[in-house]
Image (cartoon, rainbow, N blue to C red):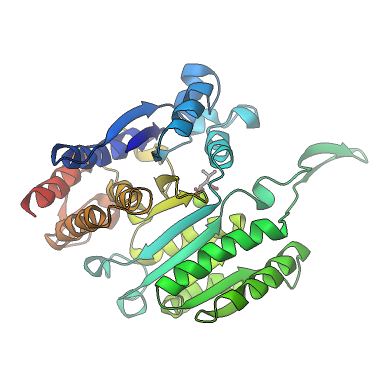
Length: 356
Ligand code: IPM
Ligand code: MG
């Protein structure tokens, strides 16, 4: 298992370090894990002048899976767009054809009170958001800012081909048939042709999955339903931009965006695994960031790219036990629990792994 570690910027190195310790633990237990670090994002701009340098591209292509921290920082805001850290992330997703982004939204029972929503709304929550990741307005052309009739206009193109929609629909239907058999496809077909096609193709694909109950929802309604009654959802499938927005919203149902892992897969289960949160420059270097989303991303990696279901489950149990013991980073802290920092959270998870 050749794993590329791309810690990135901000809190990235702190949280990836904790996931790395967890991977080391399994290496010592005998798993054949090889780790190699590379640069992506702002740190790559600083070191190599671009956010996704050739050396990182080669490392990523050779690796079986990639574990990523986060990219971005305010010091890069004024760089030309193609040099910004986020472009590195978009480029690696595109280069490796990682079109299927799986974002599980699971509430650990111990965190029911950490959510800003009432516990009865979120208790037992278990949703999977399937976000298309290499198309849509994120990559569509033409795009730009230019002068027209004496003033600047900014424009982007929302575009999806049938084949792009079909392949993500298959991923979502298959996920739904392994779960509770319900799939909700989110679009904005009342206004946007691109998403009319989305709805048509998803509906057509449904014929191949008679055991999955498909529903459709407009994105504005979906945003509302996610906070009104989130447990109505099993699997949600949507495009790149809507998925970006809805997954941040959904993360707060679980108490903190610091809890949510993700997997971005190609059609052969090669994957890039990352927490869904960003680089959090405001708390970078303070040792207080929550490493659990990254540790849980490593668990997803072992499950999806390496078929190590048992090891993945062990990591998830160790995280759950740590929460049960009352340990919390600042983002999920509440009265009566024990506030600890990033490294100590890593310590606690490791201890629980060793005790298994
Ligand atoms: C995410 C992030 C990225 C995205 C940014 C950093 C480019 O918000 O992974 O959700 O928009 O996809
Ligand atoms: Mg996002």
